[in-house]
Image 1: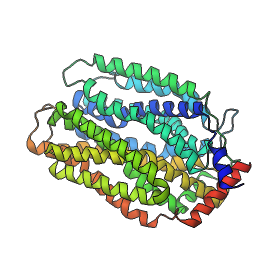
Image 2: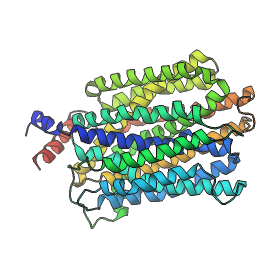
Image 3: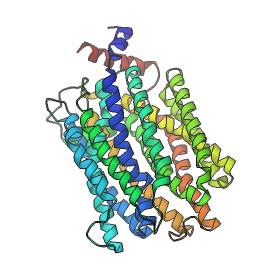
Image 4: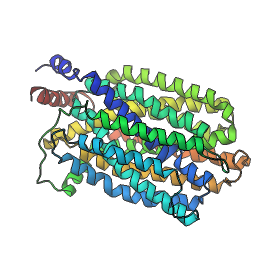
Length: 455
């Protein structure tokens, strides 16, 4: 079967499937971004007054749990057999608990209001929420790889997901800073919004499973142990390089979404429209650039350019972020980077999974997603822990929101952008060892497409 016929067959992914996958992924992302980046650390640390060291310790302990549950779930989901597929049962039946655990996080539990009580609540909330997030988000993440094989068809799915991800990106960036309660203020509006979000997310995620169909799959090898399955992932050199990128992207997204709360508190919410305008322009121009240059440049080159541009903007903000025009440039280049993270990263991950099938003859999306989370979920914990520790070292005071010293303001800029800049530089260098490019890879890719088109 020639390339044209394969492409036409792949492009018949129903619009309703792309729509429901994208909106479910969006709502899942909105809840997760509030928990892991935009609001939770701020809520416990600044609003409720949980000590910074307790806050960072909770995130570190939580990171250890993440190192266990994600690969385990990926392994289990790859071997799941049901009438509705490998992934959909976890999405459909996990939705109610996912939303419930999200809602109860933001209310005081009947265990007291001491530092230890808040510390326990933070850890427990993270454990409960993330267990369901792992089941649902991992399944949603790998579905595009089971709905199509070619990068052209997957690209179309990812464009749909990106369009809806604007909501999951805009909500924590724009809405959370406006509704988050300041110390001493009632949280009525905030609580109303999180309840509404939780209910809406449940409805969307649950009903999405009736409109999505998994097509690209293979029979699992029941004789393969979880340890062998994990080992095979790390023998795939393209996966190791991808993980450098994936870890960096998750750390950076967490850090940037969390940092805007502190940035606008100290530098003025009146700057928000201009900053987000620059960010939005960067996202739009970034998407146009990556969509048009992916085929002629290839994934590797596009990601290299993205890393260099994003790192330049982050570095400028670290040293000159108090000068607002410089900060605008940083927001613009961050938008360019966000666009690349949303579009190029899943394209690259699809190639890594396809190459694994080429090597071992199986589709192991769940295992790769689980091991990916094993590596990247700690990035969320590290980003939260590092941020609060850095600003504390610079003298940030939770009882002086909006009135920090100049040195504390500088600490916010350092905590916000310094580590992202370093990670982006490391990622750009690591791409030297990424093997999936050129004519030989194109031939392998076409062979995989033909295999599934004929099956």
